[in-house]
Amino acid sequence: MSHWIELNIGPVHPATHGIYRFRVKLNEETVEDVDITIGYLHRNAEKICELNYFVNNTIYFDRMDYIDAMNMEVGYLRAVETLIDMEVPERAQWIRMIMAELSRIAARMVGIGALGLDVGMLTPFFHTFHEREKIQKIFVEASGGRQEVNYMSIGGVYQDFNDKIIEEIKEFIAGFKGKLEEMVKMFTDSEIFWQRNVGTGVLEPDIALDYGVTGPMLRASGIPYDVRKDSPYLFYDKVNFDVPIARTKDNMGRFLVKVEELRQSVRIIEQCLAKLPEGPYFNPKAKKSAMLLLKGQGDVFTRVESESGEFGVFIRGDGGVKPYRVHARSPSFKNLAVVPIMTKGSLIADLIITIASVDAVAGEVDR
Amino acid sequence: MYKIISEETDKSGMKVLNIDKSDLIELMEDYKDRKYFLSSITGVDMKDHIDVIYHLHNFDKNDYICVKVSTTDEKVPSITKLWKAAIVDEREQYDLMGITFEGHDNLRRILLPDDWVGHPLRKDYDLNKVQYVSVDRDGNEHVSFDDKEGW
Image (tube, rainbow over all chains, first blue to last red; front, side, top):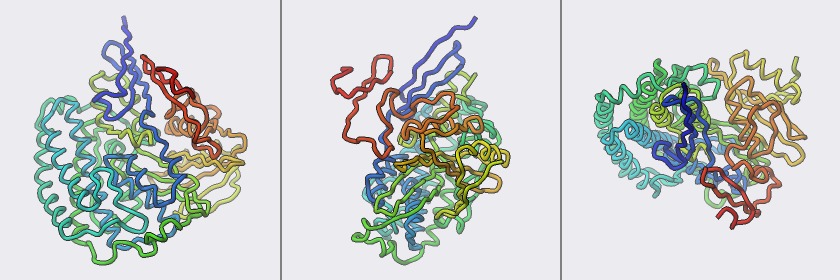
């Protein structure tokens, strides 16, 4: 005898980590089907980008993955700079890399902390947000913005690194290494955390590829694909780092992949700081008076590795000062679409953990 | 066998294949056999026709290619049978660009409410016409041009 319940989760619910609506069809406590409604945060950034000059659009990309704003800017600027043939000075590229990795750490701190919350562990959340706060202080020092930074611009960055910022980053990295191990121990020492995560939300690699899943989710399914390694941008080919994978394909695998990537990010930042050259931080061709006259013609599609996966930007220029069409291939959009497959036949409680482990950001899903 | 109209390289160094839309399924099947996966679908409104751009990715060879078709009647065949990633991508392009993907099982709006009027990414979309969305007790969204309706 089966007993059907249709349960509504969201749009505003702590477990959804953003604004989505899950309509779950339950057979007693077993999930039979999940219907995801998205679009509550839809602002149509792609249309807004068509109405603006190339230089104005970085702020709309900031607000896509709003917890990982630096990587969104890198993604947009990689496409624009390819389109309009703009060279970026070496120092600016190293600075961008440091900021992108710091932003990745800050975003992961939210993801991991929230995963802990959903399991019922309050403590790690405060520790992760304490570390995130330190990164945001560095962002404020460099750009003036805490979360929506608008730091990078066509041809370089808004402001050069001064000694104080470099000192702060070094201090943060020195403290973070030990702190990270302490935080990871908090998770992995907990019996409940293991029991809730091991074996739940299993994603087979062939399904992941079929659904276009990328990022830590794909790597946790055993496929070592990382844009930073496979098609290097900025100077990722000049630093040493590893791409971790997990064979377990479950939520615990995803957690461990994310943690290992944090260690690799720290490694990248240390190498960047050692290699940071002197020189201009801005291409003089893109100075203020020339900004609005930058013209682009043709199609480009470039991609970067953001916090949640492969973030691609397509731009078509018609030779004018504004883009003709901008399209963002957002990783969270694809990652979220696979949740019904991952949770079919599991318990309702595992659905909540799986949503937290997918770590889709509403701003990026809806754009 | 499918016929490639022209082959070019775009600014980011990616191979671009221009094909007729009647050859689309055949070409995609060929690339699926060669272990390519769908990365994204983009529609571009060129006023007299719509370009539909597919980006495919091979993880083993780390190769990206771009397939372009153009349509004058806003219809292209669906590739959801080949890659499941196309389900959400085609729904998104239908929603925002108004491209009908023939053969898609569940082609409805994904980001905007179901009864929204118009497709915002079209160049002739009127941005001054405001549409109001209200949500009823069951969470279903209703769209109206009248701001009082639903309250």
